[in-house]
Length: 136
Ligand SMILES: Nc1nc2c([nH]c(=O)n2[C@H]2C[C@H](O)[C@@H](COP(=O)(O)OP(=O)(O)OP(=O)(O)O)O2)c(=O)[nH]1
Image (tube, rainbow, N blue to C red; front, top):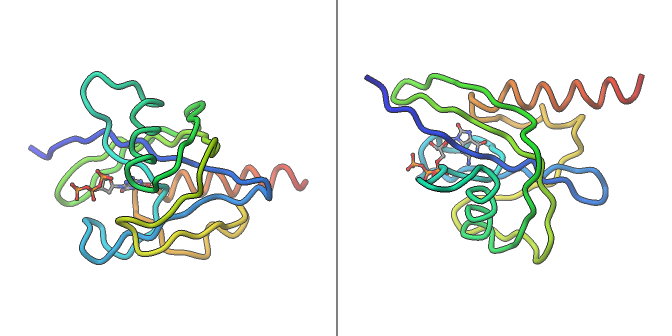
């Protein structure tokens, strides 16, 4: 049976309403694909605590994690991921690359210009639709 992992991911918005995207490196699983930064929820953590910890470890800055904006289960060849995207804001520091290859701030409407990890595609589509609705 495939392993199921619960992963939290941060949809971090800056003052220009751009969203932080992170490029997975060639030696990570799901290499060279873009994702929302985050990681696996550990035992005893709630979603917000897990995400705040992951961002601090991975990007050396502090965020405040908010509401769940997307919760989706995707089946990869080797595991099943429950990807939960949370709204987040940086409260101190500036994100830096430690494990990823690159970080990029993109306006919501341009999120489909990069190649996302397959599990992220529904969340990305939802975010893009929100901007389309806001502009109508
Ligand atoms: N953080 C994050 N991970 C994602 C996203 N989409 C997606 O498929 N993933 C996958 C990549 C990883 O396999 C897993 C997250 O685990 P992790 O952040 O602890 O990453 P990792 O590279 O150390 O994981 P692994 O090699 O041990 O599998 O979820 C996303 O938007 N954000």
